[in-house]
Length: 197
Image: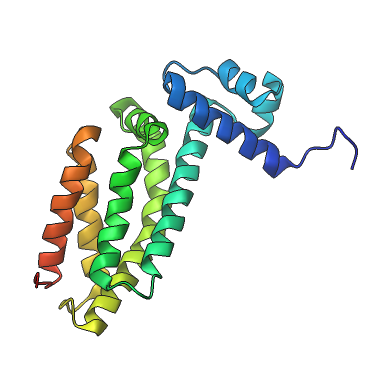
């Protein structure tokens, strides 16, 4: 491999990482493509080999955060030493943790602006179908264990995700999201038939 040959996936990841750092320090709106390429140490033309626009790299940063969230959710759901109730709390708690991370919150606030609905919809179309089976499996485990009492784990997963989405649709301020998620978790557990011991 010659010194000029660069792994395309690594270069793209470098740009996404640089964008996330710049977004976290100066905000999404105040960040230009020039800022991103400067932070990545590449020429501006290189940026356009991987992304058509700033919106595309914003979505890539959000997708990267989504991948990190999904990895954390998968780890929480597969923890054999934890009950389905603890695992559900951990999954929903992952959203609360993300809402406290400045690099995530700035991008999240930007993508939730009304004028950015297209970006938001692209993210949602990718993220929710990945999360639904995770929640469904967790509910199914809770039914099998006897912690939950619902006839249809998939419908219950839809309900839980609908509640989480409602927090977002209500335009809940980022500072209030952890408390809203805690209440949503309590309500979801009651609907699932779980009774605190």
